[in-house]
Structure formats: structure tokens, C-alpha cells
Image (cartoon, rainbow, N blue to C red; front, side, top):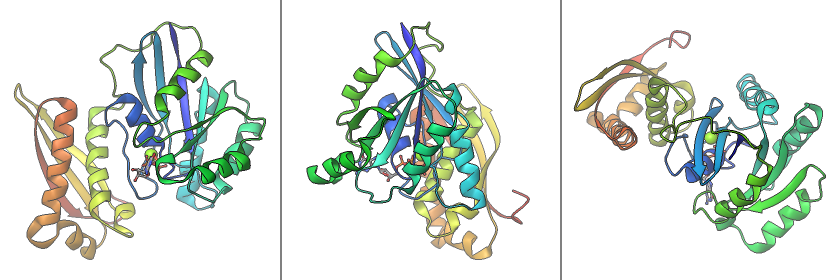
Length: 282
Ligand SMILES: Nc1nc2c(ncn2[C@@H]2O[C@H](COP(=O)(O)OP(=O)(O)OP(=O)(O)O)[C@@H](O)[C@H]2O)c(=O)[nH]1
Ligand SMILES: [Mg+2]
């Protein structure tokens, strides 16, 4: 039996959470076309024959220095010393290398025992020349044991990658039961799902300025009833979030409810409230 932690590091939007979901085969990590969708280091687990892959998703790394970016970057880097393997995930179509340079620098400065691999993601949307160029740009570094061109979205190359990296995982007993895929508390998971739907249905600054809380959960035999509040700080945001005759809020609630229901395999009653609060209260 092999078992170990694989840490995913990369710039925001490079596709780390999509890759975790693709491997686990379930939506356990929040994915968004917007930046900063993952905000904490989240574990998920996948068993394939005699191998237990414990995947650790992280927030995107930022080269820019703002308060929030620093916080996210520090969170992501905080798990480096626990990792057996590290996958550095790069968007093959992106020409920006400042984040990956920051990761490379950190990995050479911070002591760790992990083997490091380069994952060139999103190969479904770039041509071969672009991929080769990227390999040329990043591939000759001593740091990476191997380079995997993959598409986290379509799954291309993912199985081969897992097959290859398993030999670098330590021989160890299984740590988690086969049933366990979710490593966060249920209320955090419910909050994350709704937050993702708010991201999808709003634009510009709103997603970053509002927050979601799960206030009450009650379980019965047939259903789980969840009460949540979306906290906004401006009247105009509340107006946009709720939408014409509540239409936007309705879609947010419905998509969130359906996803939670699919995951929990149970009927979900979801009550969503929108509350105008001052920024430091929510
Ligand atoms: N075409 C294509 N799109 C992808 C692929 N992987 C991820 N995406 C898209 O890229 C966007 C960002 O994906 P995420 O998985 O949220 O990226 P992330 O690295 O987790 O981002 P943060 O959590 O903000 O750090 C989403 O719109 C995904 O659908 C891929 O292989 N191909
Ligand atoms: Mg993410």
C-alpha cells in the first residue's frame, strides 16, 4: 500500500481545484473562472487500487504584494513541509511567469522532502507549439522530476500522471476510510458551495466583498435544512445580488441546493437570506 500527501501549488486560475475535482471524480473543491476562488488548504482523497492519494488544494500564489494576496500565498506555502509530492500547476496558455518564479524560489528556500513535478494544464486550449515553448521555458530547471502536459477539464493525461507519481509516494498504511472524500466540516462545505454560486452569478467587486455564513443546519430522515446568509456591504450590491424580483438569488439558491443535494445524496431545503452589514461584522 502507498499513501501520501500531494500538494498542488500554482497561480490563481491555473486549474488546481479543477484537477482535484477531476481526480476525485466529485466536486469537492470550488472552481471559478474568477480569481481567488480557493481560500484555504483543502484536502481530498482518492483511492486507486493500492494507492491512497491525499490531495491538498491551495489558494493561488500571487507575485503581487497586497494584504489579501500575501495571506493567500502564505496559506498555500504553509503546507510545503507536510507534502510528499508537490505538483506545480501552470496554465499552458499564460505567458506570465512571475508566480511560478515565486514558487520555484520558495521551494528552493524552504526545507522540504517532497519530490516536485511540473503540470502544464489546459492543453485542450493551446496548440502543440505553445506547449513545447512552455516546456522549453520551464523544463530545464533542476527542480522538476518530470513534466506532465494535461487537461484538468477533460481529464487528458491525468491518469498517466497519477500512474507515474505513485512510485514516489511512501509505503504506508491507508489513512482514511473509503467513504471519506470530504475533509472540511459540513457547514464549511455548504458555505463554500453557495459562495461559488455567488461568484458565478455576480461580477466585478461583488464576489470579493460579500461573504456567506451557514447559520443553521437541521437534519431529518428525509432532508437536510440549511439556513444561510449572504452578507453584503452596499445597498447596490444587495440589489444586484437579489436581482429583478429575486431572480438572481433564486438561481444562486437553486444551483447551490442541487449541488449540495447531489453530493450529500439527500434532499436539501436551502433558505438564503441577504443581509446588509458593515464590513467588519460579517
Ligand atoms: N480549458 C480549460 N480550462 C480549465 C482547465 N482547468 C481549469 N480550467 C478553468 O480555469 C478556471 C480556473 O480553474 P480553478 O480550478 O478554479 O483554478 P484554481 O487554480 O483552483 O484557482 P484559485 O483557487 O483561484 O487559485 C475555471 O474556469 C476552470 O474551468 C483545463 O484543463 N482546460
Ligand atoms: Mg482553486
